[in-house]
Image 1 (cartoon, one colour):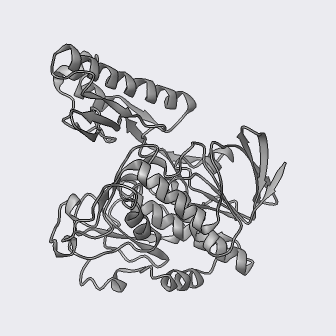
Image 2: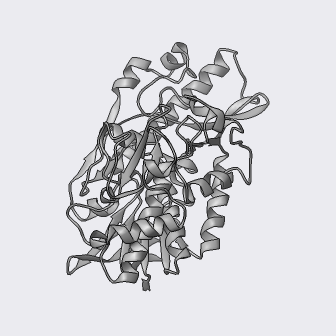
Length: 405
């Protein structure tokens, strides 16, 4: 069975949803392929429930478009609040900026609503198994689901998988990085729900949730966890991630009950992630590679601006060329965590606002190239820039009315 589309998007995370909504709103027949049962990626299935700042921490909004639309929708069907005084902050700390914590399930419902409203054809529980190429272009994808093996053809493709699935299936070299065994899980504690962040964050920094005794009961320690990293991605690593992190949680609760600090009726897990919470998996080798030190620098082919969520005052222009692969194929773009970003730039670009911005830019570029009869790799930047400004997305620092980045 062959399904035919204008644009096919791999990965239903934040970047994939943004790309799909943008292309469908432009009248393109769009399919979004997601391997799990939820859209939203790490934000929903991965329980990473913080929509990081759209502002610079000094009262200036820097990221607009679908990113802002998503932030506001993330709290429509559940709790969460945008700090009302974020415009008055100076060197504001993270949680006082233009930001919101949200319920992952609520956000998933809101993203479904965006996709439904745009008319995107969504294929959940569907895994891209193979990529077909002809005349230097991707022609179709082989997708496996309950119907068996299905082929989807399209004229343009966007990889928003977070792990550069297209590039890897094509046998191309990608950039990889280390990840720690980080586990966010929703927990009930006595009278309320909250997020249990596990022993360490994705970078190995301790969370303070697990005591030394808790970790010892689990047969580990903070020092061991910091060193216990995995590079890149493989099928075995995914299974190992779930087994190891759940073992930590199991030991954590068992120790809490045995020590008498808590009991199983008032202290227990409610929701576990359905995808590994790896932060940096695989980045495509793009025409331009973002690295460290890019904050405050003008970029000729910018598609928008993002804030460094870790430090107030630092903002980055994002090049279109980080979405375009070095090796081709010519009708493919990348978005989200697998764009051409490494090192410190990867830390800035792997989060929700940047994923939404690059997803929208990739969707717009794919649709424009199809309308104009060009390839995304050859798209005239001025055409893309004009279209982005037409939907109120500032591209450069001087458009933000900020005196000095």
